[in-house]
Amino acid sequence: MGLDDALIFTRVVEYHSFTQAAQSLGMQKSTVSRRIALLEERLGVRLLNRTTRKLRLTEVGQAYYERCRQIMLDFAEAEQAVMQLQQEPSGLLRITAPIEFGQLFLGGVLGDFIRQYPQITAEVEITSRNVDPVEEGIDIAIIVGQPQDSTLIARKLFESRRRLYASPAYLIARGTPQVADDLSAHRAVLLPQDSPRHWPLLGESVPCLRALSCNNITFAREAVIAGAGIAGLPVMISDAAVRRGALVELLPQTRLPIGELYAVYPSRRFQAMKVKTFLDFLMNSLPIPDGGPLEPAATRLLTSLH
Image (cartoon, rainbow, N blue to C red; front, top):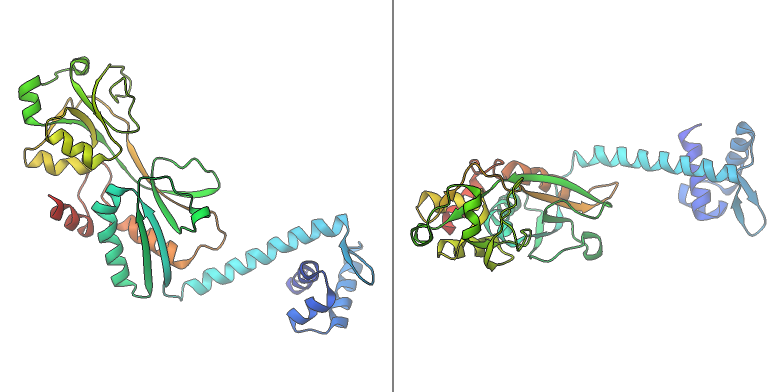
């Protein structure tokens, strides 16, 4: 099968017309008709049933069309991939992100990206709500935890450990837990993913006394610094407070669920250059997993916030 025959056949099927297919290809209608007839003769099957008013695919023709259409899509994708290698990312990039990630990291990273690629403009929504990228026309939605929608493409950005923290003032007033079971006598500051009845520990079930629950990890950290109780917080937003003495890490032998951050985007065959380039840029600019050193953009933001 020649690629040109596949193209002619798919155009005839998609336009439901020899005349319109010929016009789209810049060919004579008689040439298109003859090429289809020769194709059927070579294959030994009838692909199309023709009347003066309609074209209808035969069962064999339908199967053949689906394969030809896939070939055309693959060919177009190959061409676009080559073309994109020569293109500068440009256009409007729409992003949503959790509040803390947006405040601590995304602003600096996106600022660096726009400086490097001045043809890019961006719209960013910093939000705690669930976002449907397809429904809302979002290029990239950054979310905490794995996406539930299997139709979306998900790319893990990084993982962040959680540890138990309290303020020195709280520990002076309430005592320092020495083993996990001691937590049952302590007040808990809980995040949405935490059980309201048990401390967020892996492999252990320890009842907790809830002092406060909230949906924002920065708010939870500040409440813990003020003495509200003990919380399981991400290492990367707590390390600076530990270094300056505002927080104390507790029970390092205990294990808490790891926080995961994902970038999700619609499942499209032809991913825009702006999306691919920004995702790669973001991956190279993010903190090293498990609370390691931060790249310059993130470091500047954290420094300004503490």
